[in-house]
Length: 438
Image 1 (cartoon, rainbow, N blue to C red):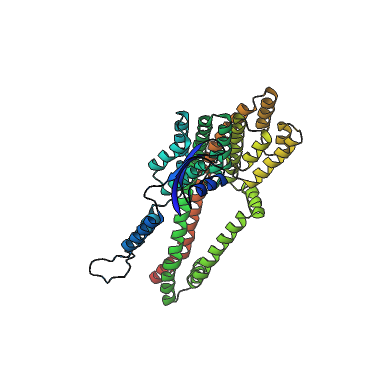
Image 2 (cartoon, rainbow, N blue to C red; image 1 turned 135 degrees about the horizontal axis):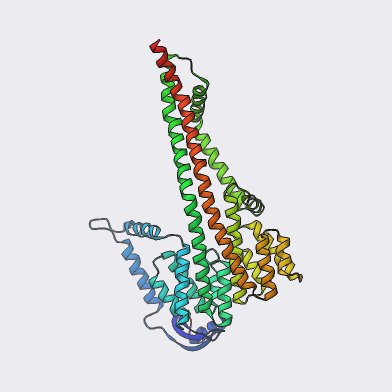
């Protein structure tokens, strides 16, 4: 077997190059033709022979099997490999929305400048700081070099690139305006990032307070109340009902805390598994819309995503029936996604967008009126963008209202906790003090 360097053209006419192993020149050409490539130039690779590869592998094996000075021959030192594996694990991090935004913005600039996609991806690999995303970019580049389109290459990574991302890239490739597609993607991702940031900002304070309250209750129940219970037991005083209740709860927690933690973890894991299932997730997404305070935010965030995505799909020229399927996969709520699919089915039967929106039962009268005006005037894409801005404003208002409503609730919870502890712990002390004075 020998190694050959080749240049060929794929079924799209793009020039590709690489190395392959074959018995002879004719076998190499046959293998390329079998892959769907048209050979242009094939020549033996210099310095690449099986013998030299075997020597190289042997040298690498010997280098890995060397030990530190003074160690016995033949003993393998795994320290270097272990440190390398640990270093790679520490550097590996999740691909975030920021990574996608930077990638889309860079691709917009590079495609607008007319740079070939394979060269653009090579440059992005060198400049990217996330090793996980570097590996993804390398796989995308390899898919391009094998003759696949960019949208197909991105489709191999559905956990990273959404259906909307891939569909807009596909439209950009077919229309020759890939830079405009990436510009739309950047705008969408930045709006999505802003929405997530607003939601996290509104829930950060109450989450911190609730966690602090839970930790404080745990410490008081497990450490503080048992100490008071021992003191009261030695004094033999008659305890009020509040104190006996607190001591009973504390004894139960101290004796059964492993089972309580295990049961709580089991309930959480069971609920998550149920929420990830199709039937359970659909039911949970429907009930989430009616949660106190947070339900309105959840529903309006999903509707804002629907309107924004639908507007982008229409502006990109995607057929409305196909676009509805893309929109349904991006709203982030399976119940609303099911309503969107029903709207698509109504449109495919010839119904108007306004009628399907009315039958969906998830839009306010103002939004329905805007949809009707947009459909009649032929500016539905612009009107849906206005609907998205309307829902974005509603989300900001709901988040502000939720923050204002949560603060007094948390204050009441803290006040109630302090009152219960005061009645349960300090009342016996006051009774003992009064008895001692008498």
